[in-house]
Length: 207
Image 1: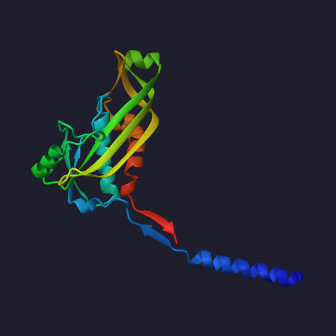
Image 2: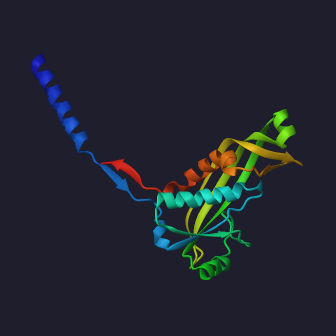
């Protein structure tokens, strides 16, 4: 009886192993196919913060788009005046005008909000560089707008908290104007962009 029971266990284990071995790693396409829009314009993310934080985040977003879907064409439009933001009402006329002027099928817009800055006081750094490191809470809201209709075809928001270097302080407001922004703010920017751009990446599942 014991021998029969042992044989049964071995057979079941063997069948389970065979079943697992047959499971293949299957590629899942990105939720958003950026190539479908032809050339995509990107407007520098809007932000009330002083300095280069928004510009660095915008550039990192472009890099992530092209790394996630190689060959996608991106036209960097810089700052655009008017109601072209990552949140709030959309100025359809403005979106359509951008599409006609630059020949883009869609545009990416975003809002970068610095929610809180908690300086880490270092008297030496304050006296020598007039800047400090700080824990920064930030939020990034992005969306992809179709220029023909002004419709939102994708949107995503995220938050992150990271310690950043070389934050200028004064008059109750922080300034993000480090000489090497990527080194100073890179970790915060990467966390925000990596989260919102997840829908552009290929993923894999076992089936």
